Length: 230
Image (cartoon, rainbow, N blue to C red; front, side, top):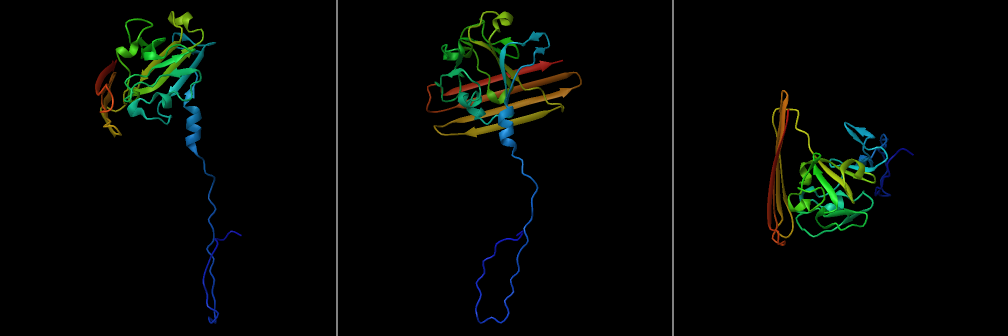
C-alpha cells in the first residue's frame, strides 16, 4: 500500500537482489470547473433591474464567456443549446443569420422576437426581420437576455418574446486591443478585432468583424460598431 507497482526482470544467478519501491504521492482533491461553468452559463434575470420588472416572467441570461461554442461562426445551436423551447433554423454557413423562434413560431430571421442590442431595437419595427438589418457578432457579446411569458406587458406586442444582445463593457485600462483570426473548412476565414478602453469618465468599445466563405451564396460580410459611454 502507498507504493507504486514495479515490474523488474532478475536473474537467478544474482547473489543479491535489491528491489526499491517508489512511494506514491497523494494528491489533494481535483475540482473540475468546466462542468460547473456549463451549468452557470445560463441564469435568470433579476426581479427588478433598474427601471425594468422581470418578476413573474420567464427569462434566461446566457453568459458568453462561460459557454462552449464556436463564436467565430455564430453557431446558433451551440450558443442557445441550454435554452428550452427555442426553434432554430440553420440556413447560413457563416452564422450571418441567427434565425431563432419560440412557441413554435417561424424562426426565419428571428422575425417573431423583439430583437434588441443594448436595449435598443435593431430593426425599424418591434417585430419584423431584424437580421435583414444586422446580426450582432457573438464575439462582441457579454450576455444574451431572453425574456418570454408576460413580456408583452412591458415591451409591447411580442408573440415570441424579447432577445437583447448586451455588448461587452469597455476595458478598465486606457487602451486594449483584442484580435482573433479563425480558419475553417470551405474557405472559411473570420477576423474579429476590438478596441476598447476607459479614460476618466469617458469609455469606449469598438469592433470590426469580417467573414468570408467560399461555399455559401453569402460569401462576404463585414460589420463594425462603436459604442461610447460617458
